[in-house]
Length: 186
Image 1: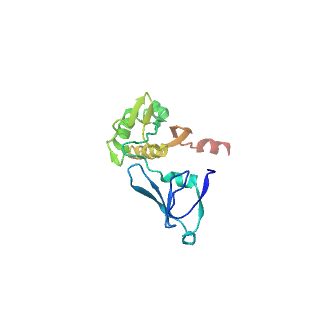
Image 2: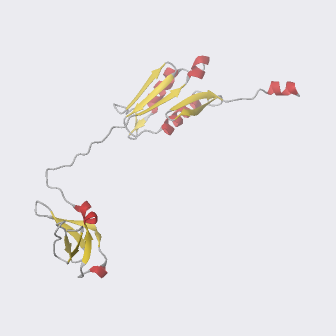
Image 3: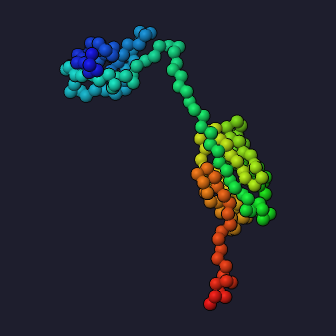
C-alpha cells in the first residue's frame, strides 16, 4: 500500500480499515463493534465514484478501545515574578508587608479572590515581593494590582511601575526636573 488507495463506496480500505459510506462520511470500525464517523463530509460530486483517501487525513478519526486512555505527560509551568519596592521602602513611604498582604487578598484564581491554595504563592524577601504561580498567570495582572495598591495608598502621584526585566517590575519615583535649577540658569 502506497498511502493512497482507490476506495469504492462501501468497501474498506486495505491499509487503513476506513470505510466510505454512501460517499458522504468517513467511518471506521472500532474494536467493540461500533462505528465512529467523522464530522467532515465529502463533496456530493464524489458520491458513487472512486476517489483516493489519504491515510494522514483519516488517521485523526481512529477510535481507541474502551479502557485504554492515552496519557500524555504535561509539564507544570511555574511562573516566577518579582516586584522590587526597595526605593519607596528605604524612604519609609511604603511598607512591603502591607503590599504582600494586599496581593494575597486581591489575586484571583479561577475567578475568585482568596483562592490561592497551592497554585499561587506570594512571599516577601526584605523589600521584594515574590509571586510564584503554577497556573496561567500574567505579569500584566501584577502591574494592574500594583497600580491599584499605589492608588489605594495615595502614592500613585509619586510612584510608577516599571518593567526592568522580563519577569520583574520595579516601583520607581517619577523623574521630576528641578525647576529651581532651570530658573537659576536663566
